[in-house]
Structure formats: structure tokens, C-alpha cells
Image 1 (cartoon, rainbow, N blue to C red):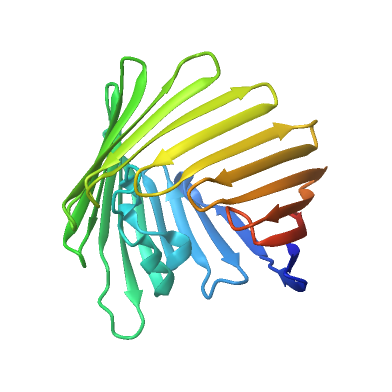
Image 2 (image 1 turned 30 degrees about the vertical axis):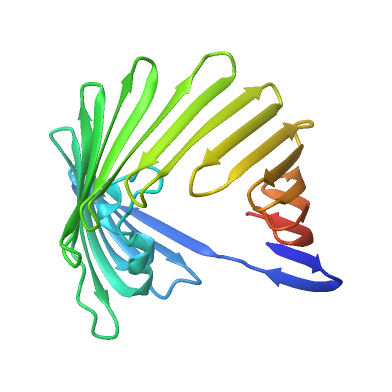
Amino acid sequence: MAEYTVNGGTGTFTSSWSLAFSATQELNNGVTAGLDYTVLNPLPVGWIESSMGKLSVGDADAIGAASDHYSATQNVGDFAAGAYTSASVAVRADASLGGFDVSISDADFSGGAPADLRVGVSGTFGAVDFGLGYSQVSGGFGMNVGTMIGGANVGVSYYSPTGEFGLEADYDMGNGITLGAFYSSLPVGDYGVSVGYASGPLSVDVAYAALGSTTIDMGYDLNDAVTLSAGYDATAATAYIAADYDLGNGASVYGSYGTGYDKPVGITVGASIEF
């Protein structure tokens, strides 16, 4: 990706790239072994997988923490999964047991920090789905439960290290309009509502958060290749307009003008390609 931004008459050029390699080998008894390597990561990831599950070892950030089975509702605390980015190497085992997905991971941190054992479990009971996560370092756990009530998708979560909990819900009215709302116990008075509308190439989303911002986002598919978008943060009085042009085969060009909301300040033009 290459990007050029002009802000206040000063131009800045930035670029980023990533190169990844993968190899797999079929072994005996339905076992597959593989190796994944991304040039910018310090370590590769080696793994062995069968019908019983998967065992991975290598770059901790790429493997991730087993506590990711827990999914927090909006603005509720979550495990510092990003901490695994500072770890050198991790090991993780994933398996499906009795219809439940179970994971356990441990990471070795540099600088003398203790290892961080994580455990996660997720699954469903009829119309109810759940997720659990545990971290040995924090000694805490997270739990989320979701189901459908009266046509609305409802989810709740609890995060024990801070004792906070939250509720979120969304309801598709079937006419292109979707209603949403959330509440979290910390900080006090943290709640919000949203309305979304989608019809053909047009989409509009309006959101209000008591302790955040009131925002409006719009998108319009001009054709199969060109997408126009705009957004406005009423609380901060900032906005953006943007256009994306899909060139096909993983390549695209884009441009935007922003005053601080969701896009860089100033005029930005860029190109991206994947192959």
C-alpha cells in the first residue's frame, strides 16, 4: 500500500507491505503439517492438524491468545490480547469436544515478564451461544452469552477483572432499517443507540453514544467498481468524504478529504494491491 497525504500544504508519503509464505504437507492417518511465515514477523508458525484438533507453535502475535473465545459487548472490557504482540513465542492447542470449541495457549514474554496462560471455550445450547475466556496473569475471566428474543439479536457480557457488564441488541425491521442499542456499566452512564438503513447501493448509519459521539456515515455504490462514502462527527464537528475505485485482481485506488473523523486530516490519495 502506498499513500500520500497533504495537510496544511505539507505532503507526507507513507507505504506499507507484507509478504507471507505458507507450506503444507499431508502426513499419515489424516494428519496435516504446515508452516506459515510472514516476513515482518520475527518467527514463523508451525502447526499440526487432524480431526482431533490443531497444535500451533511460533510467533505469539500470529497465534493469538486462547481467551479470544470471549467476545465483549460494546465498550465492555476485554483481555489484553494485544499483549501477545510483545511475546516472543507461544504455543496453542485448539480442539472440538462434544460440540464445544476449546483452546489453551501460553506465551513466553521477553524482559522477565511471566508467561500468560490463557484458556477459552465457546459453543451453543440450542438457540443460545456463549464464550468464555480466562487469563492466568490477571486471574480474571470473561463471559458472553447471546440469543434471539422477539426477533432481536441480544448479547450480554461480563468481565471479572473490572467487574463490569454490558448489554447490546440489534433488530432488523425487514424494510432496510436496523435498530441497535448498547449499555455498559463502566463508566457510569455509558449507553448508545443507532439506526441503520440500507437499500440498493445506498447505506446510512446514525449512532449516538452518551459518553462518545453522534456520528453519521453514508455509503453509495456508484457501480461495481466505484464506492463513494462520507461521514460526520457532530460532537467533534469533523467530517470526511472519500471515493474508492476497485481496479480488479486485488488492486484499488482511493482518495479522501477529512477534517479529523475516520480519515486522515487533509487530502489523501493512495493505492493498494494484493497478490
